[in-house]
Length: 287
Image (cartoon, rainbow, N blue to C red):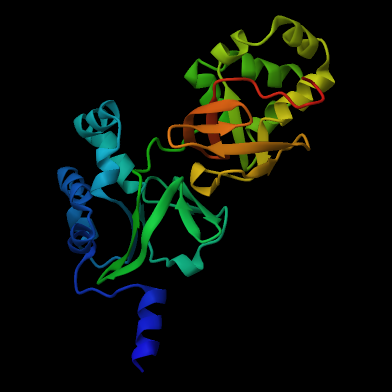
């Protein structure tokens, strides 16, 4: 009987006599609860519910860049928007989650993306550290990152609004592939304009004068499906839309795809994820 009880607890999580905010404090979510207080969401999450809440740990808030955290805490509407993106209006356990499922949150139904990588459960790029923790009015899943920035744009919109990817976008438009930056889900390795400026001139001429080679090169930057860094492993081989593969190397201080360093990872967009790279990826047939 004891063994059966242990299995049930491991599968469904621990039950608690606490409400969502009370339980979150006990699960290393003190800073999350403090911010809920600041924008008046604690009473709602102490109500009948049921709710599902993705609670970032205190360490997750400590890891936020100072400018991001300062901007959030000074702008109460922005902070409330971010916190509501961590909350669902019903109770959902991890056994009910499916890969690539997008779930509406209390932030105007803006959706979080679920990814399952082997035994890892990932919510918009954030790993679930502790799942299925039952409160009296819902369930908590503890996560290792704060879910920011919010995925309000598709890839094309994000790249265009950023201002650092003009040459990359222009290349997609030139060969009429821009639809792939709207459809999905995809994973995109996006070189900046600075990366194009380091490109050997003879290769650049070779590319822009041959639409087939340019198309192949752009498709070499795309993977089908959403692959956050939480799903990457050292030595991983990733098939691209172009047909050839990319190789992942993970070092303590950097993450490399082929010979290109990922400078900014896990940018969530509505149709997948973007990883910014410092060099243009070239398929062997082009290079």
